[in-house]
Amino acid sequence: IHLLQRSVMSFVPSPCVPAGVRSVQEQRERWDRKRKRTGRELVQTEQKYCEQLDLIITYFVEILKAKGTLRQDIRESIFSSIKSIHLVNQTLLTHLEEGKFGYGFEQFCPHLHFYTAYVDNIQTAKKVLM
Image 1 (tube, rainbow, N blue to C red):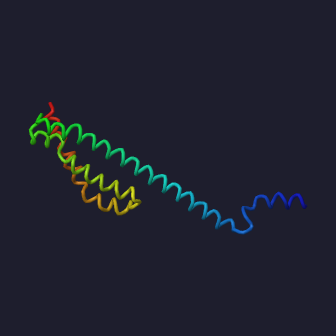
Image 2 (tube, one colour):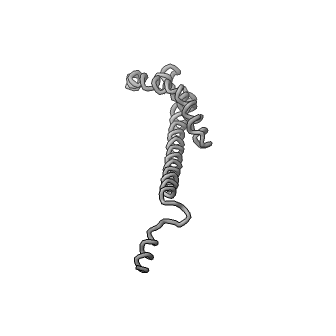
Image 3 (cartoon, rainbow, N blue to C red):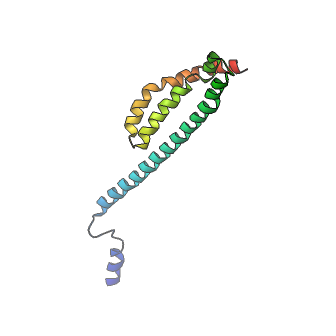
């Protein structure tokens, strides 16, 4: 009987914390780790996206403008609202890096029309490039 008592006792998580409370606490800790990991991934993805937009603006839009390779109307028909998209995403990134996810997206969403304008312009851009 003494051996049986010791083996049963080894399965008890902790004498100070009831089993139900411990599992709730562990679940909260798991969700907290997942939330933090997701937040980091979101920030990293947004950083990469903003870097790519910056490269496009620097090496295509601004250089073409500086060299006078394309008229302004043609540049605008190709690149449309990309500068506005970049600015909005830079602002979103700042909020995300500060941990203000909700506020960042709240400020970002009203500007989704820049993406609509960009996508609506795709056919025009293709025609100009061909």
